[in-house]
Amino acid sequence: MKESSQILLSAKNLSHSFDYPLFHDIDIAIHKRESIAVLGISGSGKSTLLHILATLLKPQKGTVSFEHKDMYTLKDKQLLEIRRNQIGIIFQSHYLFKGFSVLENLKISSLISNKKVDTSLIEKLKITPTLKQNVAELSGGQQQRVSIARVMIKKPKLIFADEPTGNLDRETANDIMDVMLEYTKENNGGLFIVTHDEKIAAKCNTIYRLKDKRLVPVIL
Ligand SMILES: Nc1ncnc2c1ncn2[C@@H]1O[C@H](COP(=O)(O)OP(=O)(O)O)[C@@H](O)[C@H]1O
Ligand SMILES: [Mg+2]
Image (cartoon, rainbow, N blue to C red; front, side, top):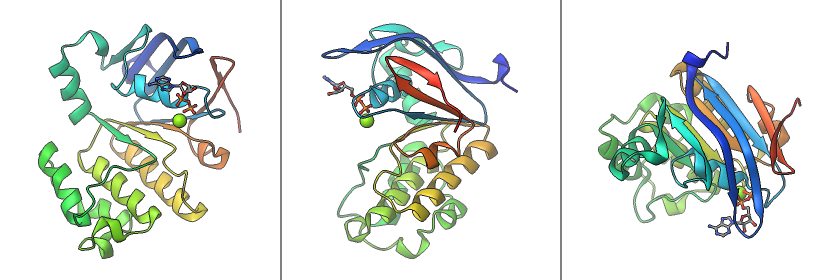
């Protein structure tokens, strides 16, 4: 199943330190239709690893290749093009445009990516009744659904999500994971999530723990 022709993103020998070394010589690949979860205690470097894989942070050592292009040797404009059109990033604190309605927030994403607002996606994420509401009026769970819809509207090949279900009740967390997993399978995409939640991680094909500066495969 994991053939090299199926690789979307491949990272080799990644090392990064801030005040202390976070990890060294990490290799990881994301294949088409693969979902990967990374567990690990707070401060172990999970978000840093996600940022490196998602075009946001150049690693101090190592390479990240997206569709066989070494990302951090590309020109800024080319890297931006990948970030804008091929990669979707979902953060725990969603950066929705407060003061605008749900539909307006989704339309901004559709305009930037030149893709239609996908109504079936909105249905699946159960936000149809909220479309006319101001995002600031929504619950945390509803806001997270909107932020996921906003990222998915641009139909990215890879979705990165940093603790996407961190503040959500179990049912909403499960629903959101299921929508992301289904998207990944149906679109030959890849999903990479960082989470504290082993039940959420267990829904993914591949699970690692970032521990002692290494990525250790985990079976849950
Ligand atoms: N931009 C940064 N500058 C300096 N230190 C950082 C930066 N980003 C993260 N760190 C530090 O690196 C460590 C790992 O952070 P992070 O990757 O966010 O871990 P995790 O997501 O596993 O909690 C923390 O000690 C954090 O303070
Ligand atoms: Mg983090």
